[in-house]
Image 1 (cartoon, helix red, strand yellow):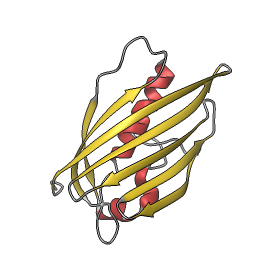
Image 2 (cartoon, rainbow, N blue to C red):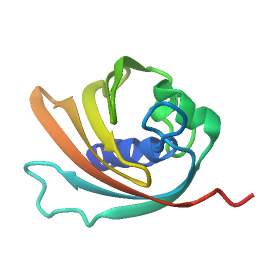
Image 3 (tube, rainbow, N blue to C red):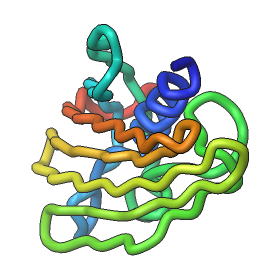
Length: 149
């Protein structure tokens, strides 16, 4: 149970680190408020939505592979995760990910952007003791303005 919540939180916070669009693509830099709702079948109670605020740099916004950063620390996906099949079509960005390690999982995401808002979904597939577990997350983002320096 703690693993599922941790994985969900990692995905939610990690995604916030680069939600936005700029330039010719749909992503934009700035200060974003992101609300994430998680749904995991079999969980005894629904988790309340989480809201975070994140500064997205121009470099983050320009590179769709930075949607889920790699590395250590809060909000980062483990080094064992690889982002693949990154596609940008109009105002839509989608990708897949595969994470190895002690608790491997795969996932797919799709986000649709407008100038100052976006919506998105991420579906993560895990194996818990031979039982498949699916976690779905819904994202709603709103650009609050430029990042404070």
